[in-house]
Length: 208
Ligand code: SAM
Image 1 (tube, rainbow, N blue to C red):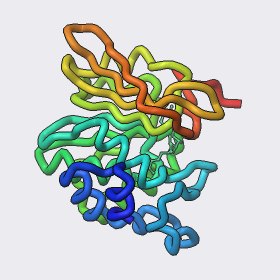
Image 2 (image 1 turned 120 degrees about the vertical axis):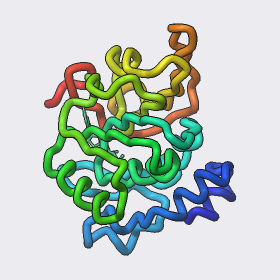
Image 3 (image 1 turned 120 degrees about the horizontal axis):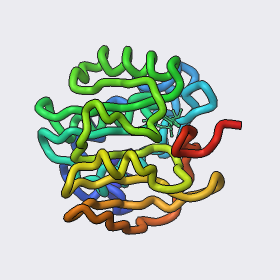
Image 4 (image 1 turned 90 degrees about the vertical axis):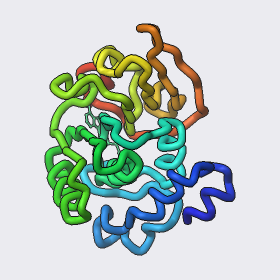
């Protein structure tokens, strides 16, 4: 699977390739989906949610340019898989805080991450559209659900010189944006069209 992603130019750094090779994706899936763990597709994880396709995890990791020791906020813990890949990239001195609005998914992700040995990942239940001011500022922010616009609290909680990757748009499809904060100004770059489940929350989409 990882060789395929490299062949398609979606993985181009050795660091991201090594991180993807280290994390066993099947561990983060329910029994019923495990046989498909190494196909490049999103898969159901319960509560109507999905684990992102590996090519999307790879694209976001490359776009974030994660470094040893960084503190990262993820919005949308889901299965915990993307958090584990990012934990490999920031190393034991770094930290991943990942937020999930569904308590049952957060509980499963916490258990799997602990069992897999990711002591530097903390799963927080809550509305990630408001971020997690308690541990701000963050070197990197990774949003794995689609927002109608960049939530103000996330832009505020991004460290000066930091980078956020976030899908922004409607419910059908979004643009994957790379947002950089430099000298207090927010600069945005469009990395292409993507499809994510919605960010539901106060600064996201309303829940039906
Ligand atoms: N990163 C995940 C993984 O590795 O499995 C996949 C994330 S899934 C595509 C998007 C997740 O965002 C869902 O689990 C959904 O419940 C969560 N979500 C949506 N709105 C949220 C919010 N306001 N705060 C926290 N999580 C949210």
